[in-house]
Picture: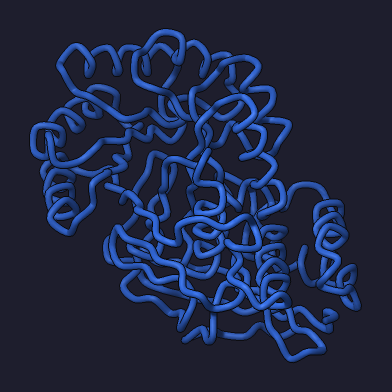
Length: 365
């Protein structure tokens, strides 16, 4: 099975409610979709969001990187040579991790289709059912409390609370949500790089002293501030998770050796796809460090790949934050992984199992 072409499309899916963090506000998922075609008539699907404030990728840069640089390298390559293809993708250009991820996801999809097996089985197998948390966007306290209660009533047992805009108000937000759902849901706090190290310690001590129990604190400081991240990790009881501070395997090794965080959040759009995500999970397992599998604002195309990885590496990926499809008004994908609020189930279909993507607008070259 050889690659004959790579085509691109645009997929737009409105969100149920605006997605608000300390970095941005979004009301629609606007993602580039990759279709890798083969001489066997099989198609592999991938996806990449424009996340300029995190990965630096825009729609324009994603399209240009894939169409002008990655595509020519892959035409004619045999899908069975997976390691060669992933190496060609990863060495094609610097950065552009989301563009690389979209193509890698599609290639892994084809590789599993070639062997007529679901991707997670090709990655090592596992229980094809996992449970995700759901994001509570930063907003007025009453709105965040209402959203939290609604999420619990829908069956979500873990809530990821976005903060990082106003340190004093952030503390009150978390206290109010904790009081509303105590005993019914675990709380994960995501500051999205919105605090300084000292602010983070102040906020966490305030919450811990008030009896607020949190499962973790995610990326409280700027991505490049590894010393600040370690400062927080050393001074709070709540486990600290690195997100934007870890893009690739080398970042993971450095962070683990410094003991700068307790948990690592793996996202395919940061790692450049599945190959490096697998490496990070294996490195973390060697050191006994837990991981979370997360996503950007993505639909069930690329999130499906993250689900397959999470299932296959469940021994080290102990936390799941794959709520992107649950935040959308509808699922544009026919086939593939089944997203039912907090429960995510993988079918027995080969690869990612995607049969059709509704509403996809193909981009002309």
